[in-house]
Length: 422
Image 1 (cartoon, one colour):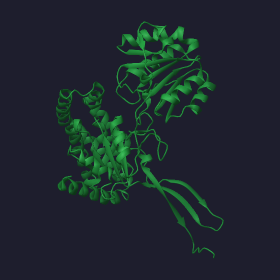
Image 2 (cartoon, one colour):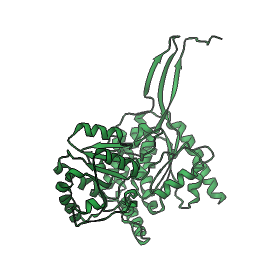
Image 3 (cartoon, one colour):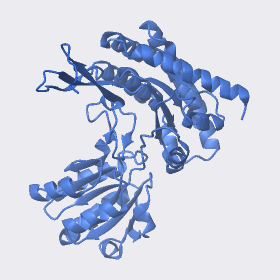
Image 4 (tube, one colour):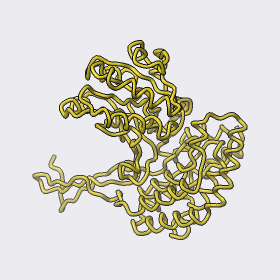
């Protein structure tokens, strides 16, 4: 390993720790000023960001990167404006730092309070999506954390252009420019150093990307990991569903954007309504260019459905490919989801509230929906301004991770000369 690279990353870690101590004391007005300023600089730098992105996209296509990855990589005027709007949304949200979660007084008169505080320094490793540079930087800033960003080599120029706008916003607000740092080297050894914690200066790693990236991070990290895993999402059409509603939801859940983690990968249909629902649904999906793979029972209802292997039901296609399976009942659907799913997002379409309630309680996923498209699995749609990822784990945070989830807590204790008896 290069000594120069090690020293450079060590300095980044030390600077991040110093910045984190200052950010923890910054008031909400200052942080909001920085975020609004960042949004303005993003808009002002739109042409430079687009030029950088065009270069990244051209290089990615030349390397034969998948269509799903290209879709995540591409920026346009609308997406850049969405980045700026996201920064402004985060700016006006309540500051999570200092919020009191609970207060109580013990019989001896000691007063206790549980208060939210920043985690400290967060390392973010991600692929493709340049908007993550802004979202991660902004959410960490709002929650009082310094962050170290390491994007994929395929988006390096786009990330650097966005990062430059973020730094100008920090400077405008008088906050340390090292509060957000971007590792610009594409040397893969940098990832290993970051996973090692940079001499104790990184408190948490958040990976966001494909299965290979997540596996490496979870295997090699020597500090806590908040993982964003694959989205093996399901939409289940229950026997009591409004079929017109179900048709619209399925088309949106699969095809609005196939390359996002909230895209439905498997459609489950109750046996009792398959004859009435599936032929028209399959035709509509086929006409939109979606490849259909199903079990033997579903293939009987449409010539557009080819055979599905068991592995298909374990696969996040991130493309216009949809698995289909006919299930016997609600319990069968729940069992399928809990076996094949990734614990990300699953939805039931039904007018039976009892069935929806059972689905909500029995499906073991971070996000469980009723009569809604799985594509709403997004921090912005949850009112979080943006997300740093969707956690499918169980510890610390689950589901879309916004600013309030990037905090931990401490206890404050107030006495009046209290001493503990022997």
